[in-house]
Image 1 (cartoon, rainbow, N blue to C red):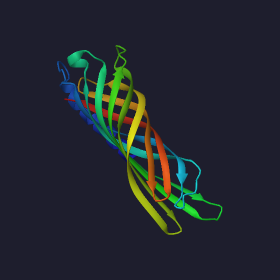
Image 2: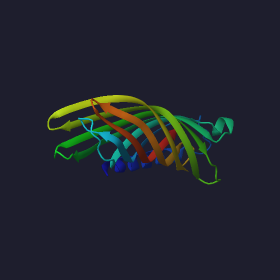
Image 3: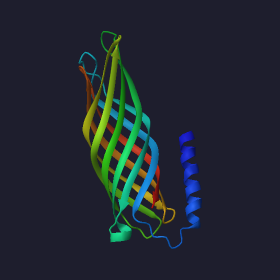
Image 4: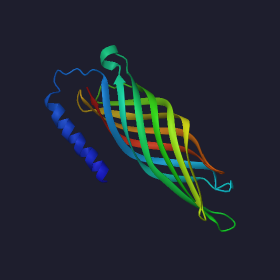
Length: 210
């Protein structure tokens, strides 16, 4: 809640400052932004430290990210955007007990660096729905522990995503962005253990145009 309060305060301060000078401003198309939200992570094809299969898990974790992009609308009259997006997700933890009453504790971390493309659907109002897709890099960390037997590793994977959302245009400098994204981050392996991970990300962000 504190993080969301800080984001809301930041939006209010920037909005108030930019509304004063909004008239007659034409932005360059370049923008930077920050976002935060919730990720529903799906962990599947999991194996414990002995290589034995485990059941799938769904975990909810927080996320936060930074973006830098370019909007082609002002300069080229094209309703498309290109964006570089870094997102960090908090660790997801799960615990499984096998038939021998041995408990395997897992911790999976995920951060991504993506290049995204968006198509904006103009409505003639301050609200702009959009669809998008992205490709990039996922760093997936996996740590498994069973009865003191510890394995951990980081995997660098190809990642892809598709998403949709809606932007609210506060003024020529400031946008609010409510977005949804499905992301496939590939597989993490540590010794004989492994896990594949996909996420459903919901974020609220603010973008400032230069």
